[in-house]
Image (cartoon, rainbow, N blue to C red):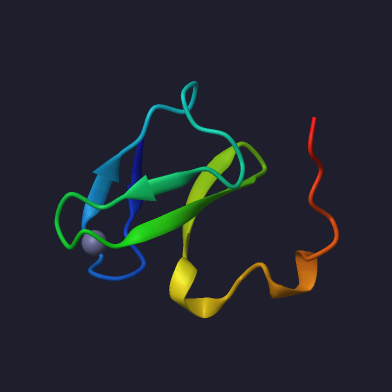
Length: 63
Ligand SMILES: [Zn+2]
């Protein structure tokens, strides 16, 4: 499926079966890395520039 780059709005092809929540995808167009967010089975990309994770610190689980 295709997801929109939050930086340049390029449509990036992403395989739903190959990405997980919080994976990083690099946009081939602008080179910006974005974080995968999955909601209701749909993939979205969140810009890492927005410090999306700040609230989640401490929630890091290490297997
Ligand atoms: Zn881009």
